Each structure stands twice: as structure tokens, then as C-alpha cells.
Amino acid sequence: MLALFSSVLLTTPNITGIVLAAMLFAAIGLSTVFERRAFCRYLCPVGGFIGLYSQTAPIELRIKDKQVCVTCEGKPCYNGSVAGYGCPWDVFPGGLTKNTYCGLCMECIRTCPHDNIAINLRPFSADFAKPSTRMDEAFKAFIMLGSAIIYAGVLLGPWGMFKDAAYNVGSSSWFIYAIVFLAIIFVVLPGLFTLGIQTAKNTLSLKQRFASLSTALIPLGLMFWVAFSLSFVLTNVSYIFAALSDPLGLGWNLFGTANTAWQPMLTSILAPAQTLALVGGLIWSARTAQKAAGEVKVSPIPVIIYCFIATSLMLWLLL
Image 1 (cartoon, helix red, strand yellow):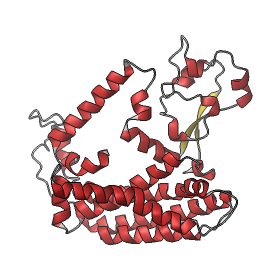
Image 2 (cartoon, helix red, strand yellow; image 1 turned 180 degrees about the horizontal axis):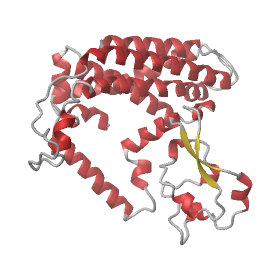
Image 3 (cartoon, helix red, strand yellow; image 1 turned 135 degrees about the vertical axis):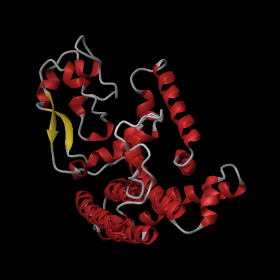
């Protein structure tokens, strides 16, 4: 639901501050009632989507020897000890198979009495070798994919009426925008995806195929957000110089650049960089689709076509 208000959150500093403060106090309040990081695990929208994309990371926290965990008494990595806290994310490292639910706080490394937990380097997106079977992760992929497409159209597109609807929270036009926003993310995109994959018959249920094959949308959504963010990062990079000299807005001029005027920079590479990100995301998703389809023994072609159409739409919106 927070995504519905992101147009305002991203452009109105006062509202941004209020929302961040509310999240902070909610986290503190929940920590006084529930054990461990209940807010981070169940309510924080940022944590949920970082966890989704952490599957693409080239590092992982894993145990070295499973048998050591089986015979370990007390499980201090999970329950805590004098050496440190138990896992704040409520995860037993001995059963960790992917990055999604690990916050990489490394408390378990401190508390493990057998030095049986390590940080490993690995290939990018190694977690995709075994597709997800969780519907919540599948819909997170659709939320991120759909949100990127909608934001590209609303914030970067030439349609003023869409911008007005997104910014006028509480108005009748905003409610129409909200309904369309939610319909695209939770009905249109998943519905079209389902129509594509239901033609591939096998022994698995449609729900299982949906959850597994939607793994291919995770890298695509990630690169959609990279391409979308480049529109703001590259054109506003000159603000960095002023911020470095006066990071707290107190009138400092540490490096003599506090009065640097804003001017667009690197705009000549914006379109090529966005195109490269989107095409790279499409290739990445196609390879992930092949792996996921191989696991569930169906053809990856419908998923690849779906990703191609989504990428073409995003290219049109951005360029």
C-alpha cells in the first residue's frame, strides 16, 4: 500500500520525514512487545523487497558443516549466548538455503561456538538455482515489476493528468489512480502471466508453476528499477557536490562546493545506460526462466515472451 503514496513520498520532504519517523517509532514500539525484529520481518516494506533482491547478491551467509549444527547443543546461533544475541531475524542458520530472510547482521558468527558459519562468495543470483515455491515472494516480484512500470509512466511520462492524480492524495482522481495501480499489479500482470504459463501442462499445479516461474521476474524487476533510478541519479548528480560540503544544511562549506549550482550532467549516457540495464535484465530473466522451467519441467518460452513484452513497454516509457 505504501507504493500508492510513493509519488508524494519521493518528492515532498516533510511527508518523507513523517513516514520515516512513523516507521522508526513503529519499529521501536513493536520491539517492546515482540521478540527479535518483528517490524523488519513482517511490516517493513523496505526489508521485504531488499530480501527479495538479496537473492541476486554475490555473497551469502551459510553453515560449513550441517552435521555440526545437528549435534550442537543449545543452538546459540539461534537462541543467543554470552557471546551475542540470538538471530534477530528469527532464522536458524543451519536451515538457511537462500538470502531472503537473512539480514546479514552476523550475530550468528559471533555466537557459534564451533566456528561453523561463514560468509562466502558465490555467483550472482545463485539462489535462483532452486526456484521459490512461495506465493508471497511471487507477488513481491509482481509488485516491484509493476510499480517500476507505473512510476516510469507517471513520473517520467508526458501525461500530466496521471501526475496530478498521483499527487492529489484523497481526491476522486487519486482513488481512480489507486484502483488502476492495484489492478495492474495484482490482477493484470499476474493474470497475463498465468494465461501464458497455464498452456504448459505438467503434473504440478498451476499455483506451484506460478510461484516457481515468477522467480524469473525478480532480476527483471531489479533492472527496471535500476533503469528508472538512472533518470534521477544521473540528472541530479551535481547535488552531490553541495551536499558533501554542507551535509546537515547548517551553512557549512567544507570543500568549497556548497554553492555549486544544479545542472544536468551525464545526460548523454542516460538513454544508452537505461537500454543496457533493461536489455541486461531481459537476458538475466531469460536465463533464470530457463533454470526455473527446467526445475518444474515446462517450457520457458511463455515466461521469456512475457519478459520481452514488459521490457519493450519499459523501454518505450523511458526512452
